[in-house]
Structure formats: structure tokens, C-alpha cells
Amino acid sequence: GIQVEQSPPDLILQEGANSTLRCNFSDSVNNLQWFHQNPWGQLINLFYIPSGTKQNGRLSATTVATERYSLLYISSSQTTDSGVYFCAVRMDSSYKLIFGSGTRLLVRP
Amino acid sequence: DTGVSQNPRHKITKRGQNVTFRCDPISEHNRLYWYRQTLGQGPEFLTYFQNEAQLEKSRLLSDRFSAERPKGSFSTLEIQRTEQGDSAMYLCASSFAVVGSNQPQHFGDGTRLSIL
Image (cartoon, rainbow over all chains, first blue to last red):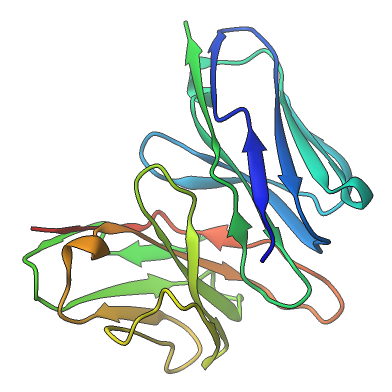
């Protein structure tokens, strides 16, 4: 089956720093979503981005489907950005999302 | 805009007991999904409904697990004869099916199950 790999697995930032999270996937996909799971376990939709670039405030994401990767950019990080960031993909053959193992982000004040 | 609602938020039960969780999707969404998340891992797909039809099931969904969506609205997930390994967060998601277009899945806050 399709493999979804996220890097780095863990990241510690000082408040105000910028970061880039990466998601690689091993097969063609028709859907890619980025989520933030906060310390209370809530999965928050960040982006639905099967291809192209989107921006939402301090966050932006780029997916290059032909090269099978997506990037999530966090600028001017805040302590509330702490949590786990998941990338999830969907293939044509199924409606299920397949999640990566996440990047655990800690932003220190 | 009401999001996906899951009840209960937490469930603690003894090994061997049966448990049932409920999920109410976003009202216009006709697709509903169940996922399970164990500590330190990403969510894993369990099953998917389009309206009332259960169209896909994971091998993770053993015969002790059953899911229903009788009227194409809310769904229930039942686990019979619970085991220690069933301890996890159970997440429900929903999406709106549009012919020729993919739509994102929206997740509820989950039900955290602890087996004593």
C-alpha cells in the first residue's frame, strides 16, 4: 500500500521562528490534507491541498503531486502552534485517508 | 456551522464489556468515516459509509467491531467483549460527496476509550 512519511519526527522551536514540515508519499494521490492535532487531541483541518499552493495567515502549504511531496510552512511560530501535524492522503481506489506518523512540534516561549 | 459531534468524549470500562460510540456528522455530509488512533500514531481507517451503505472496511475491524448508519445520518460503532488493545481514541469524520470533485474530511473531537 501507499507509504506516507513525514519529517522531521520532532521539532523544537523558539517562539517567532519559522519552520518547514515535509510529507512524502509513495504513489499518486487525489487528495491531501494537513491537520494540526492540539494537546487536547482535536484534529483541526489546516489545508485541503491535492496540488498547488495555499496560504492561511501564518501557515502556507505547497503540494507537488508529480514529485509526490507536500510542504507545510509555519512562520512566526507561537506557543499555540504546539502539537502534532499530520499529513493524510487519499488514493483514487479508496475514500479512506492514510495518515503519516506526524511531526511533533513544541514551540517554547 | 455545527461540526462533527461524538459522544461520549471519554469511556472507561472493564475488559470484556461492550461499548457503543455515537457520531453525528455535519448535517449535509453523506459520507461518514471511522478511524482509530493509538498513542503516538496517526489515525488508522476503520470503515466508511456513503449514506446508509457501509462501503469499505479495514482488516483492523475485527468481528468484535460493528458499525451502523441506519438512516444515513448518525452512526454508531460498537465494540463487543473489549480487550486491552482496544484502548485508543476513536475518531469520526464526514465529508460531502460531489460527483467529479473530491472534498475534505472533517473530524470530530473523538471518543477516548480506556479498558481497565
